[in-house]
Length: 337
Ligand SMILES: NC(=O)c1ccc[n+]([C@@H]2O[C@H](COP(=O)([O-])OP(=O)(O)OC[C@H]3O[C@@H](n4cnc5c(N)ncnc54)[C@H](OP(=O)(O)O)[C@@H]3O)[C@@H](O)[C@H]2O)c1
Image 1 (tube, helix red, strand yellow):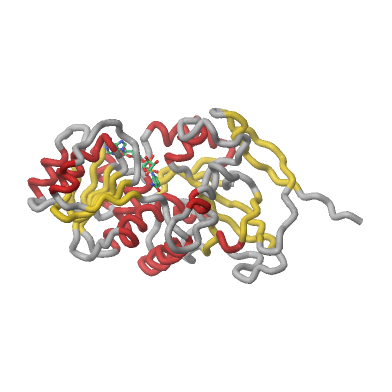
Image 2 (cartoon, rainbow, N blue to C red; image 1 turned 180 degrees about the vertical axis):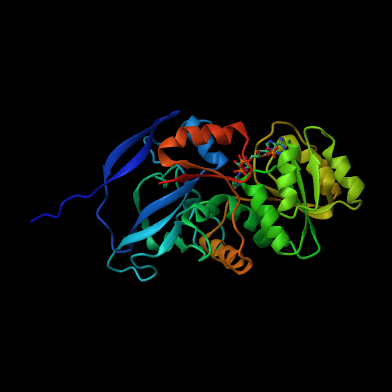
């Protein structure tokens, strides 16, 4: 007798701006795959761009959105040895980037963009594209790690070489920057944070931020930082892009490092400073599974707890995306299944 086809509830981006709840068949499990029952997901700025069509108008629709989730293995393929039923796991952001340098195939394998993401009750993933959840974290906390935390980790400790005693500047108080603050403090660095909100800067201080600047009240934030750190800052987590890069180039020390991560602000920058200050400007695109595993060891060792701003139910995904767009959050926005 043929086995009964199993179905699961998914949230599909059927057209830009429209996310619909549907039932879909769970595909037959290949030998190397596992089924993960998702318990939580988290939002990244990329998810807002993707779901509105601002990321690319050419994405194949429908697609299951969101890259970051955490759940529990409920079924394993016949050749899987890395995981067993009941294991707590997170799918990696780029499913095909296991180790080494980023390549074309890996770059095309990001969840919730060109391939289905995690906004589904049960998802099928290759076992090699999952990592274990650090033991002290809940599903909600773990769901924040795959993109934002790994991007900050890769920037500072894989491509960058942040060490104890260095200075790190992180722009704003979104997901990437708050992880940068927590990870840099754990490594013994001195951390500078900017924000448009005095209240958010107070929260950053509670997390250990050493020097805070309100970039809304103080548009010349680069000058303020240089008054305090006369030689400039060793490493910058640059989430603003062209609109903040010129001031970041003013703020970085000679021979320092800027991780080019985000594109939140429009503007222009003077490339001359790149060479005259002999700095390294490194583009970062999240990270590989091996980087994720190294980061998880640090998170587990230092018992770092991700900062969650708000938890929504998965049915409130649109409200959660609107909250992300408003910029009112500090840290991460999470969805609970
Ligand atoms: N390259 C990668 O692999 C990668 C990975 C993750 C994210 N990103 C990108 O990095 C950026 C941040 O992502 P996220 O997930 O952390 O976003 P997020 O959680 O939405 O955080 C955005 C925060 O950035 C701050 N901000 C906005 N405009 C700013 C400006 N002009 N100057 C300084 N800070 C500003 C605001 O902080 P305040 O409210 O405190 O002012 C805002 O809350 C996005 O462009 C995202 O697409 C890239």
